[in-house]
Image 1 (tube, rainbow, N blue to C red):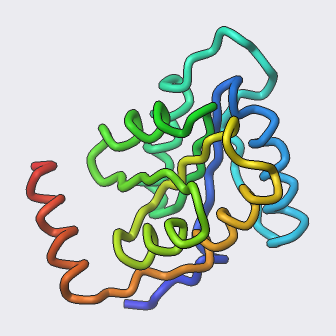
Image 2 (image 1 turned 30 degrees about the horizontal axis):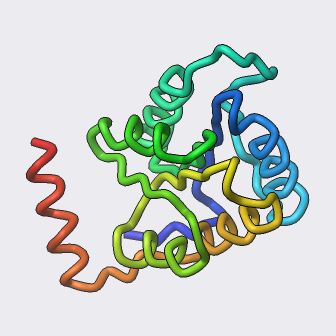
Length: 155
């Protein structure tokens, strides 16, 4: 089986109102700096009363059905992360620093990066995102064994 590079994997991005501004900035970064074509799954305008679960579920379905990666953003990163991890096959983590953004890919093969708009500068969010996107899963036997145990729990 051919290993698909990070540049070839489809990428999806969504937020709620709390992450709307950071989402728009990250889309420009992904397009202009990393030459990616992220699919924006909303919201498409700032609506203060929107709810993150309404945007998380469509993104998780796209990530699963396209073997892609997703980025979810809310104020703390926690709500979108909890919601995403309710979906079978999703491994979402909160990227709060550079080491974690690498580890969550290398060790846990996460397919969704969750970001906290209220706690990250735009520049730091871009660094975290790039590190997460460019880090491959290690395929180390102990990490594979752990992921298989998670899959058993999901059954």
